[in-house]
Image (cartoon, rainbow over all chains, first blue to last red; front, side, top):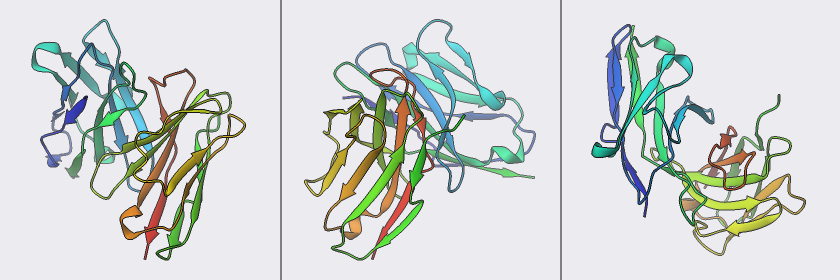
Length: 114
Length: 114
């Protein structure tokens, strides 16, 4: 069964600092990988996705993520965080063979210090 | 264009009441998904529709949960005899493709069962 681990429940960074959110996945084949962001009271917004090809993917709002098959990781990065980036971030994998669902991690809450 | 919309945005129910949650997907989207997001957790898959056919309902937690999409557009998630553990945010997502490897989420309905 597919699964996603986000080891950091809560991260606090200063505005302007760099950011890396960790994501590890378990999947039986080449995964489809996603990062979503959720602001309070809002739905999930897709930041970026990896299906195949270049392992460094660019997303919206200046975010990027790198797929590393050897480490089963898909970490999200941003070189300079803005106060408006404070939100909850979810990594997801899927859908897979015989399954239509996305499997999400438990999320990492990002706080930004002005 | 219009995104996925859900109604109501907030619902308070007394234990034992029946509730119905509505999802309007993006026009023309073939795939529709329901997820349940408990407080502090990532979304968890409930069920999947391809047009009007419910192809996967493996995530529905009990037979009190029922979903339908009779005309392949609007979907309703019904919960009978609500219990406190049903309190969560219910998210709907739609996708233009079969299988839904890119899902667009609505804002969710927050259900509180007293």
